[in-house]
Length: 386
Length: 86
Image (cartoon, rainbow over all chains, first blue to last red):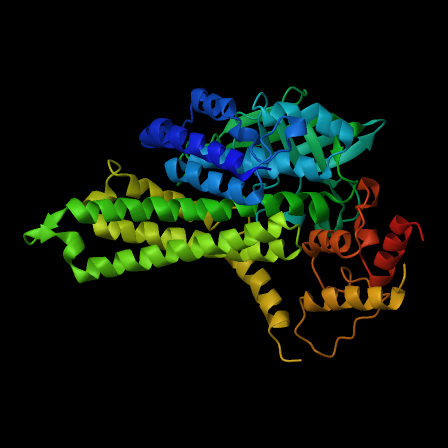
């Protein structure tokens, strides 16, 4: 893929993000609603299929340019970035990797163009970090699978047309963690699906989160994604890799947005007869923020380069990048509020929203603690004396 | 496969570098089910898939993306041989 072509896409995306999305992000958050016009606007620029191969109607961006796109959109609005994370990374990229040719032909052209929206349904009321404890069940009957259960925290679940659902085999043993899990492509139009939009969230308020309830939903066997029994090992883990890569860039986006806000405020706000940016303690906060954001972006670029090279190390470097940038976003957004003082606690300024949004990144796509366990296991082997 | 012993060593080293365990006395055998023995978690399966495709220049077919094909050094060698038509 030509670099100039990819850069031209980023230029258009930046213009749309800065002139259309960013000025309205606070309103989307207050209304807890990302309007359809924004989704359609993203789709009209091809951004919802940004990393999808051109043969399926996508733009074919490589991981590095797609990461940069995620930062551009995330800087403007976290809920719009969440659409990229879920629809494009978790669902569409997973279908590119693991779907059958027939499934790709059937779904990807619509997903790439944003004609249909996808969401990823793994989490449940009692299954978060321990994904293998999911209670949503499937049972084979003839040539269909019957799905029953409840999914929760499903980003864009209230709006999506296609759900990538992970469920456990019904009636096999009593130890829930030992049951087989499988992945299903479920369409919103299938009878038996109930959607309950969620509100009152700390962040991602405009991202149409929902609970999705499956009551004897019949899913044709051709809608099994990957092989039966490999729902978590291959499908969910693949999806979560793509999702984590996106979230890692989302952390850079919040860090960068917070940094820009604090710099501009420090250059205009006056106390004690001078701009607060002239005080060295404020400069210290800004220096730390610049350093942290640059470090986070460097980790994401490293992960992206490995991803581009199809190197297996991309998975661990993505975990490291996600862990670092989500914590970095929390720190920089918190520091931005410190620079703003009382004004930072008001929703009239974006840093209040950025602060709330940053915390979400430490929880979704694997909490910081799960990342620590993974990174520690990796480090304990890699850096041991032999 | 031109040099099976070398391939086994390469896979063994990759698994060994990524095991969850701290115990240095654990001696990975080619027949060990690395998932059932808790040497690695299922999160590792996807990395194994990428590693094998790249290291041995093969494309694992959709129907072969199942944990049992990646659960031991023996199983992986068997898969690679099959994909290479050996």
